[in-house]
Image (cartoon, rainbow, N blue to C red):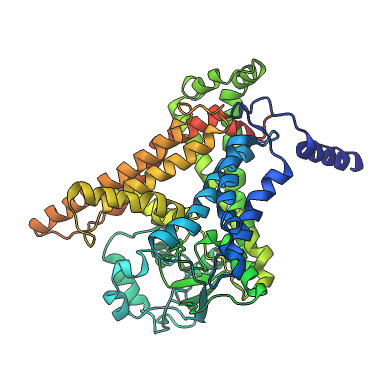
Length: 541
């Protein structure tokens, strides 16, 4: 045991201090191994600049040398992925591109775009969370428009049967005011009225044909798997009227702003994944349960699929390519070695792996910072607020099924320019919607950010990094096309006197978005195979 631990410690030490690059890492020519100083300096200088951002500024702020601090921070961030690489890891070198580009764009936004174009310096937002209770009345459900709650079904929904009273209400842990639930007879009528819209509804419908004891057992197991609920709350956000005065308050303000990637805390942050004032405060127990029961199984299962496919189809050819120290043959491995079914399976597994990895990191940070509650740094809204099965469109996937950690970046550098271009080209006024430009701008900005990052592990070759750009660009086109088709179908149904929504729409939507993500996602996976990222994810050296 001691020798095993010693060997593991030795490998970790070598990983940290060994300056030699992995043989399958192909960094930008001329870049050098990342040093501790180069990694620490950009966020540190950015933090110093943020200390001096909030008005009224200290008297010495008028110095040209002090005003140059944000420029220095931006340059250091942008220089990070161009001048450096992480020799021990392809994945960390890839992330270096994301960090450098995100940080540099963030500096420009905070110190130049927001104050000079919009006359706006971010103000801190104070959140007050009032506990809310659950089941909405039938009248409220009927009058609530879909968009008023983001169109998202409540993700924390538990159902139980009351054995003592056959006519008792079925309790649903959803969201607003507690009212008597429907009777079993009413539930039966509702179930017979149409085809169920989700797996949980189908399961509950099946429960009528089995004894109550079995139903209770089923829901007990379901409850165990779902774990403790986050605390349901109604959020009220109030913008602070003043600015930080004391040095301590200014230091806290700057730190919170630098770490505001979660989409909360300041007036310039964009709406996070909730899209609604009804949210949840996940407890530590809820986070731990989510990691153990949901995240880790998905992470391990997807990793197993990735490793199995890589070992079976790609490992031998990739090894010979690495030995030749030439990355060019790697570019054909995905298409030459993998059959179509394996390509789609690898793409799906890689997507599931990334979703689970994001969720794991998000939950771990939430657990570590939970002692700071009720401070803002302890507030981590749910990263994903809708189950995959409830998504019925490509737009729904990117709006609700994926994280929004880069939302501000894509808004400033993609959505707003895209809207401006559409209005100029189409002669639209400022109040008219420019949805096509908004969508394409957002996805094209994402395409550039991800291609720039993967380029850093493909020898700086832009053509080899085009796969991720194609993936995001095609998804942007898919969102535009599906929106046009949906509007045309609804219009046609209205003309013929039919209902705008049919029972099969959700099923067609699910097939459509999964086909788009997997089909276009092959471009994304191809780039990760080329760069060796899949090889590193599979723990193959």
